[in-house]
Length: 282
Image (cartoon, rainbow, N blue to C red; front, side):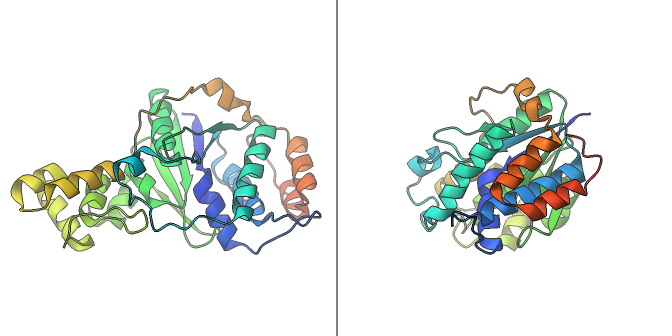
């Protein structure tokens, strides 16, 4: 079975921006987030030896979730300009490396990832999602794993179905949307059901199986629960022009990547790459 990795690029760049010192290039422009992204990129090549690589990005416009619930992610502060400059530079870098980028107005990168997972699964591909966001764990299945970065970028956990169940005390990936709907999610400002915390949400779902069954049996606020589920559920039917042959253009030449790293002034990464043998994509 061929393997594709899908990078939750916005999440990774936000993570590397805050985890690494503010590096500057010769022109005095910040490059710390880009450096961290490339460092992780090389690690992914070595660890997973993928056949295909895809990068998903958030589109800089309000999503359907915001239109549905104006408080969605309302507490999130807009990132500094130096972060967004590096996001744009990363996109240019990925284009040079011929790595396919997907983004769509009105949707988050997570929705693009959910759609790509569905499309890749239909082509009988093994999929590994790279993210720092636990929201994507709802997509884990027999063919799909999620590689979730912990604090910083050095440590990560590879989640399969068993690891998800272990983390959520017996809940499977398909129940995580209902879990977030009941408990809410402060990071995304998903309200959840008043009075329901993590332990109660797990207890109810283990007893009844799904949010809909919980609402039939328990006197909870149905409207807010169903709204929260709609906000928490990732869309897997985003219309994108998915072409696996374009994704396969990631058959990189080692010299090409080295040249790019040298242009960015990342000499330590050049040294690391020169010391790495048998990467599948080279």
